[in-house]
Each structure stands twice: as structure tokens, then as C-alpha cells.
Image 1 (cartoon, rainbow, N blue to C red):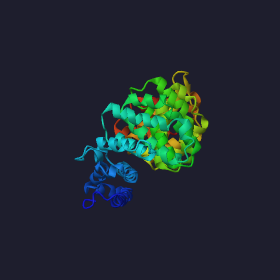
Image 2 (cartoon, helix red, strand yellow):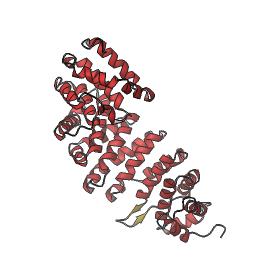
Image 3 (tube, helix red, strand yellow):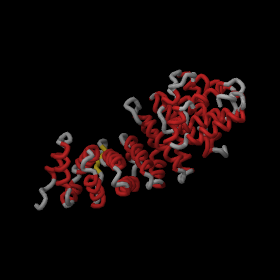
Image 4 (cartoon, rainbow, N blue to C red):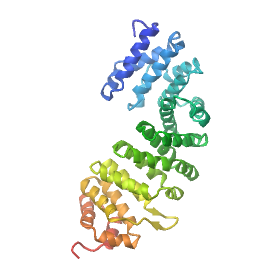
Length: 377
């Protein structure tokens, strides 16, 4: 690549090789450290190669692989002004959709702070997410995941972009795509992340979170059902449900089937503390509706699942804390307390968590114990 910088066929082939190597998590860093990223950006900056749509498209695809799962500093620690080069390459091919999508994703991940450029990127995504265009495009399964990545990067960057995404119909179209492609784990996983990102943050207004929830809860639950064997899918879907269920209007969309799925995740991945914590945290929100003063009625199987993860992760404080918050919520319903009193090990597990972590968990643990009889009584 150094020796023949003007040879489009050679540069394109070399970029393809680097792109394939970068798919490997262990080799991706080597590509960056050995100057692979710089060479790809240099190809985009070459006046001759910049006009070749094949080279430009391959370069953005390679950069996407390098960025995926890697630190965003990959695009920051370069001698070349990467964002400016990306914009120029995109400008050379305004009608080429793969180039526009690839460049937009690279721009978002480069942490470029120029708001005007970011809004241009968002305009492109708004166009991609117009239902009339997107759902008549035969390449939807290719373009949508990239567009989901762009939206995820934008929504994580600034709360103001979250409102742009929702108002432009981005969330609605992602929900429709998740419904249309339930078997695509990639589509579902990226949908979970965008929904979660658009609703997360203290600066997100309640009406916006309601709009995301009204569009997103059903497809997120369906996606969780389709990919419940994937620990990562469970973690992201449960995080999304937890975030969206902080609003009472959204809780109404989380039916018994959704709650059963959350418990199923906890049982299926009971050895994974991250999934256990995410499931318990989601249930904490779902179990109580403060506006209506309603508390979820639980079953023996529900309690067995909670006991199982408490026993499996006695050394993990966040799991114990989430479980104790959830159990405390259940005590507000008398029939739940009766069932809890009949559950073996529950009192001992609460006492063990208090002793092991030297914490009363803001008094919740003691409140649970006051409601329950001592073992053997």
C-alpha cells in the first residue's frame, strides 16, 4: 500500500484483506497498531482513489470493522484529519448509498464535534429511515444495521439527537424492522441498543421516553423471546425494558408474557451475574406502579428463580442488592408475603447478603425480615 499508493486495484484488494482481518477481535488491534487504519484513511485522502467508488466503499467497510468493538480512539489517534477526509469522500459520491451510510457511521464514531456535520449525517439517516424509501429497498437487511449503528452513536453522544431520532420516525422504523426480521439477531441486538440509548439519560423528557416505549416495548419483548438463548441479547433487551419501564404509561405494555420471559432469562442464564442483575433490575421497575399503587402478584416459580440467582451469586453485591429491592417491592402485597414466608432459604439468603456485604441495603433487608417469620417457625 505504501509502494503503490495510486493503484486502485491494489489498494482495494489490500483494504479488503485488512477489513477481513479486522473481523477478528484479537487481530483488530494489531491492524491499528501497525498503521492499517492510517493507510485506509490515506487511500480515502488520495485525490485519484477518492473518485473511485469501489475503493471508497471498501475503505468505509474496513473502517466499520475496525471501529466495531474497538475504542473510538482508533479514529482519533491518526495524523490525518479523519472527519474532514470522510466528508470529502462522501461529497465525491453523493448518490452512492453504501458510501453515504459507511461515511456517516465513521463520522459518528470519530467523535467529531462539529454539530453542522453531525446534523448532515442525521439528515442522511432520516432519509434512510423514511418508511417509503427503506421498505422498498431490496438491500434493507444490509443498510438497516449500519443505520442502527449510526443512530446508536448519535443518541449516545447528545440528548438533543435523541429527540431528532424519535421525531424523524427512526424509532418507529426500527420497531417495524425488528418485527419484520425477528430471526436476525444482529437486527434485534442493534434495535435493543438504539431503543435503550434513546430513552436513557436524566435529560430525556418523560414524553419522549413514553413515545419510545409505545413503539419499542412490544418488538423488544418479541426480540427477547426469539433470541433468549443469547446472553448478550438478554442483557441488552432487559436493560432496554428496565429503562423504558420507569414510565408508568410504558409499564402497561409489559404484560404477563413479558414478565415470564424476564424470569425465563434469569433461569436460563442463572450462572451469568450480568444477566441476573439485568433481569432483577427490570423486574424491580415492572413489579410496582407507584401511580396506581399496584404491586405484581408473584408465583412460587418466580420466587424459586430469585432464590436460585441469589444463591448462585452470593458474592456479587449488585445481584444481591437488586434481589433485595425486588423482594421488598413484593412485600407490599399480602399474598406475596404469605408465599415468601413459605419459601425455603429466603430469610437465610437475605441475612447472608447483609453479613457478607456488611450492608443493610438502605434498610430494605431489615424490612423484608420484619415481614417474614424465622426459619422453622
